[in-house]
Image (tube, rainbow, N blue to C red; front, side, top):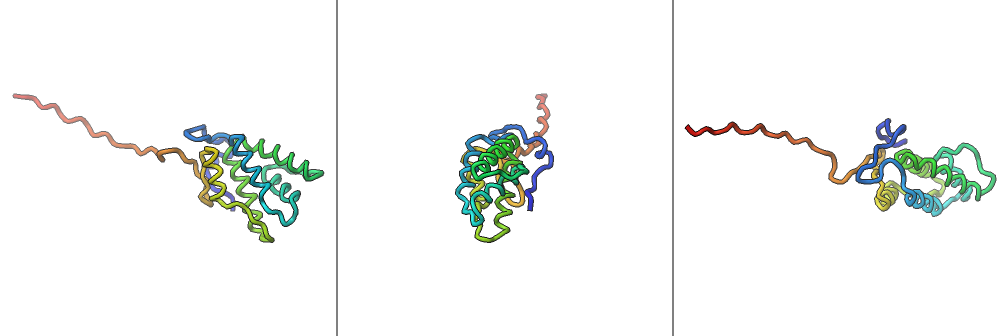
Amino acid sequence: MPLKFPGAWRFEAPADGTFVNRTMPSDAVGEFSALIDRIPAPKGHWAMLEHFKYHFGASSSSSSEGWAMTDLMRAMDGAADNAPLFIESFYDACESLRSKGDGWFVPDASHINAILRKCNVGYELQPPDLIARELGGPTIPVKVPPPYPAVIDG
């Protein structure tokens, strides 16, 4: 099931806030890349790289496992321009493998959230939702009472 979040985020990520919101920082891209390398691949490492590559928007197969890794990194770097889409791509790739069974063990939302927090990325997975988080939560308007009438001494 795809993640749910405001449709406008597909075209433009929210502006930077207290956390990094618009783009994925390079350290976060590196963390997710390293995580992919640690996923056990019962169908082979190359096949797993191709799977993630597809979810990050690359459409053609690589000629070798080395090129698959290079192409995946290029696709991930391109997807980093929009943090919500990057997170959705990684999450969808993991969930797709999880649904196959066949011995795939992939990170869950809590593990992904830990990386997002570690890298100060302003989103959190609460499947099926992706939410933006800011310190202090949403602003709550407070009604200001009218001023008291002046007391006139008589």
